[in-house]
Image (cartoon, rainbow, N blue to C red; front, side, top):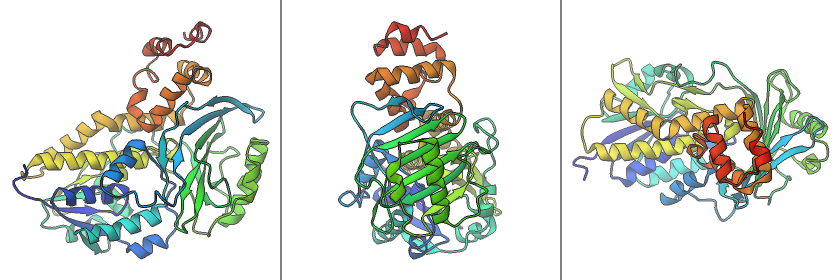
Length: 421
């Protein structure tokens, strides 16, 4: 039983901060959400990402009454992984026999709606400048706990990079992402096409701000290759047409209906780079007050493996439990560090491991796993389950010492097992 409800500030109105806010309200805490944008500004802004959530994260949203678009969206079911051969055909097709749910909702629609709902349920919403730590400190004095769930501007300097946990020191892909309409609006499955040496093409159902059943087209280009559109100075609609032509050439006959795809508006695309990074979770404001990082502020994922939003949701839920268990005691810097360290051991390290793993060429034992998944449904299910819950891939997929026993247990034929060194 909590002896005293806490007065908690959450800085940042994204997936992690908002989701945690709802949970803390349900537990009886006083919640103040700080954002530098109004709900209307978020709704009417540019597409921030193509975030999708897998089954466990969706269930956590549903438990708080936050799955508000189930009756109108295309509900994603199943993830398919395809490895493309040099001629542009499908070399390996990996699909689990029983599809699992996933959901993609435009963050502009979701976050703006959730902000209003959080306020309706009893949180205080404050729209203030948040450009630097000094401004943040001016607004967050007097709270029992301050959680920072945004890394915008110089606020990111609050949390230094953790080199031991960060898998890369530079971007591994140049990212181009479109939200499109008129392209497979009712198809439930999402597909990751891997073009070795070039990058990846991800297509998945997405419900848009415009209340359209659309799809996210995510192109992850290895720098300097034909899927790298970072240097193209074109408006979104023209860039989409160029991407269509490139995909038609690299994937002949596979995406013919993509020709009809259009942008709902010029705000429905993005382009850029990011480096998968883990930061130290405890920051210090100029006042000396310790603050705890949350979500993308301290764990930044490349979108290829779709771990960012899921990791943020699980981290927020983990923090909520630890706050509940803390039972009115002071939220010290030591408690903050321990809370994140425990999350890292429980879930975070695996999510970052899957993100890094998809960005690197598969090791020899992983090539055998992929070939086995093409032929053996049980291996396909286990491999795709690792996207839904990254812990499921460890240790058998990452450590070759465990691979043979795992594949043997799934009925992989001897001729495939013989490929393992």
